Length: 439
Image: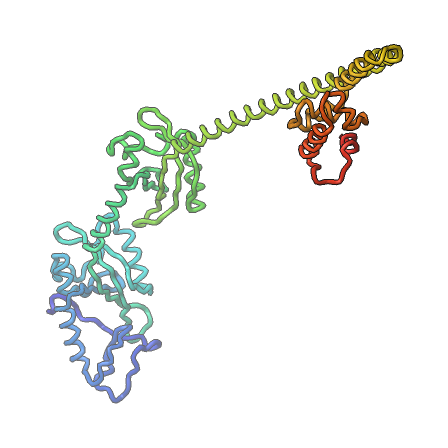
């Protein structure tokens, strides 16, 4: 038993007692551990020491202690079984001998902080075993103070082996890490070198794993030069990360659009960019195609709008010319033809006068603006109904209209009802001639 540990001068600092001691308790004047809350009333120091020896020798938890020179002063059986090293080989030696080379600097710094006052509750520390393997322990530690002074004399720490649990977690993470289609890359902040990546990272750019691990960002970055990359890394480091778009060149020279999301993380004492690269090429192509289609559609719509405007102008011009022609014809008929027919009517016989009257009525119908308006606004009117509307406007009665068309007055009355219905005034008490004159 004594080969595994040296004598500890254990004493709780008198300024911060965690277990109040009374004169009734035998053997209380001996040294104690900071944080001791066992409350073992009636036990002598020797009995307590024996219990502690049994706990240290036969307990399953690895326990170690070191002094302010970082020399190991206690190394229990569980620690021997864990590391394969015997207490006689480590007692009195620097705790540095238990640390893997790659983490020695970082862990020693943490141990120094703990030795000089920092409390450990769950500190992850890797331990180097005799056979060269590394075990990961979660440590909690308490300080051991000498009776006469406040300075830390030693630290005792207990560890819990989490190697298998971490390995299982790493296997699960690795499975997810390798199945993600996005590229996941770990980049050193200091050197810009790619230190870890998943399969998608090198496959998406067409490289083998061995080829890709030799690359730096500027080897496949398209939009930024080596100087720009260095500046960008500095900016991202200062801001803690960010998201941006860029272009990456594949091994075959093809350029891919990429959205980069990155943040700065601390890992094993180093600073790294944890970056996710998402290939955005297809989305960009779709967006560009959609934008091009929208531009083409807008151009076609603009052309169509211009054609519609031009067509409206042409139609308006045609309508204007048509109105001018109609007005000119009306004027010529009124000025030239109608006076001649009036003279002819005065000199004609009764039979001839009827024909002259029909000629006058026909000319009036042909040149009347009312006819055009009726045909335009009320397309459902028949040609005969349009003629009747024109005669009603000129003041002819149903009997006179019937005589002109050689039909009965009853037929004309029915046609007047049909006209009122088509004009939408069938149930209104509106004079048909007055209504037609308003059109």
